[in-house]
Amino acid sequence: MSRQTKIVATIGPASSTPEMLERLLRGGVDVVRLNFSHGSAADHVARAAAVREAAQRVGRDVAIMADLQGPKIRVGRFEAGQTVLEPGQPFVLDAGRSEPGDDTAVGLDYKELPRDVRPGDILLLNDGLLVLEVTGVRGEAVHTVVKVGGVLANNKGINKQGGGLTAPALTAKDMDDIRTAMAFQCEYLAVSFPKSATDMEMARQLANVAGEPWRHRPALIAKIERSEAIPQLEPILKASDGIMVARGDLAVEVGNAAVPALQKRMIKLARVHDKIVITATQMMESMVVNPVPTRAEVSDVANAVHDGTDAVMLSAETATGKYPVETVEAMAAICEAAERAEDYSRVDADFANRRVTRIDQSIAMGALFTAHHLGCRAILALTESGSTALWMSRYKIAVPIYGLTTQPMTQRRMALYRNVHPILMQVHSDRDEALRDAEALLVGRGVLKPGDTYAITCGEPMGYPGGTNMLKVCRVGG
Image (tube, rainbow, N blue to C red; front, side):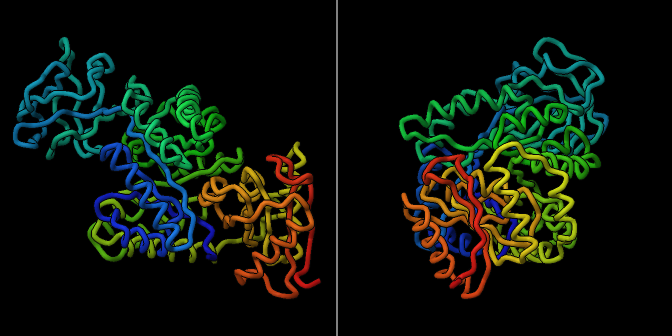
């Protein structure tokens, strides 16, 4: 596979059969997302097992991302399933209401709303399609007037313009779901609506405790979707293994116009801090019902690739859409075309602007610099934890990186790293034997041919995470 940018696809009713899973993986899916906002714990356990089985059948190892629901900041249910709000109409959001809603009022799943708002605040419902202005708070009832009307259906989300809702990032349901996710040992755990590094630290502690019976510790992805998270971006990054540019809720809180610049800033900052970054939400939304994307969607995906994102994500497109396989194939083609157009003339400037203090990071940078200037066919990184391959992947370079590891979990985790192609290899205690095996694996896959030059990194003694201390330039058959 020549594509550098990875594809995350959400599994749902349209994509859960063994046949469809196989087609999606063959089409280019690298990471499967299980959305814990929908379905039962048993559903997610069964889907995770189905993904592992499908990956084995097609000969690919993909990562699984468990995406926590987070706080339910939503309206309740309506007697008729929905209502129509007209501009100028008064409407009440009542945390104390237990009966179904009507055209005057509706209950709330989020009971703290009356304490989070005051007159003049703007509430955005259903991803910002409906706009209400708060006129007063009386007890448990938030009184509003409709500014922008439309259809309001059961359980639609609520955002406060500019942020300020106090809902905690981790709910009791999330804590149960973390235990479920650890039972099938997901490679990535995505945390919804974190506001600070503390939210991520708490999620990591819960996940590590829940995963202890399996000695499993997942990588954590912080979903940046609250306005409060923007000033805390660097601390959140440092407390996480990566971030998701969750453009849906984020756009509702900060405004659509602010999101493109924030996306570029987040991707750049993640790469500087050696973290993973996923760009998400409505990337190919029209393909939920159409067999081809819009030109704007093509540009959106391509721009994320040029920004340097590790992965682009599909949600409803593959979970409930009519064309899940076609969507994945179209996204893969867009990524490949964008990568072919990349300008690698500034690679040296990228190296010059980075400083490292660790031996293993220096070796990783040396391998990139050497491979770039010698025109190597590939870079081979022998790695236990995947860290060396991750550091290499933070630089834009035309040379493909192959992460060779003896650890199946590390192999699957590297499936999300940009320009890293993970391969499982046998355990070797002897360095020279490991180097010969690594070359043979790449020759066997057709990546390397006699006469090709490649760079290879490893640690000596073998088998210790963080021990990369050697760079070697080799010629196949030399």
